[in-house]
Image (cartoon, rainbow, N blue to C red):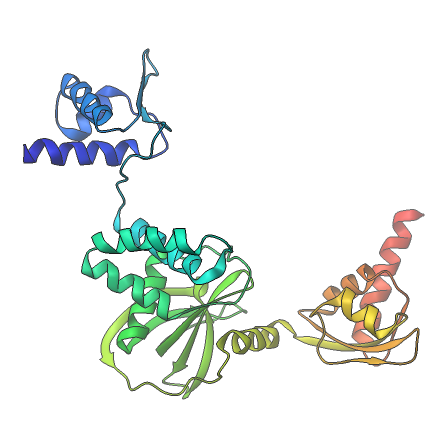
Length: 319
């Protein structure tokens, strides 16, 4: 009976992937005959799992949507991901779903093994959501490792490539994971540089705990999300320039949002002085054109030259 139950769980795990499994392939995976596979599929159907079978050379078995929600089989990473998501929703991140999410989270936590519960707690307590959705390819196991190290106050080593591509080996004390903009960042104290640093997690390689503990330091800022935002802007704003924009200051601020490197100073009802920052003067020249307003470059010859190049390019396009 135990062998049959284990085989059913393995069969269910295979069927929950988004593909159709030929009978002989399932039989080979499970080490049984195709007749046994058919019998096991019938058992799953009696348990409420809607397994569809198709005949023919390209036929096979697949799990489809049914009339009721059958029990799900989750691996460790899937269970942790669902628990963290439910905790976020139960905290009010999605209006109107707090109570439902809390009920589902309670059910899941009752059956989570202790080691998975600790992973969930580490991720939840050491992660800061700062708006936006991360689109960078970040390995969930790396996030879990860094969160666990932050919880247990363990020093971590990894290889890191900066924005220029130069790699270095880092030895750090991890404190917070921050999802800001469309990326994940790690706020940590760099032991060898004796200073706080913000690392893009998608640029980390070979992260591992070295097993040495550290004494927690006061965080570099009370608002960690704002701290990461300021550090990110410093990296992005490699060039600066000032322009007189032929727009009222209030309208300019609405059009530009947070895209400034300083204040917008009113110069009357129709003009304002704007300080800009960006990765390159070409970026600044492009975005100035998007504002759909006349402007004058004040004190940046490089920006003026970039604007001139953009203007000549547009002029050639219409000649």
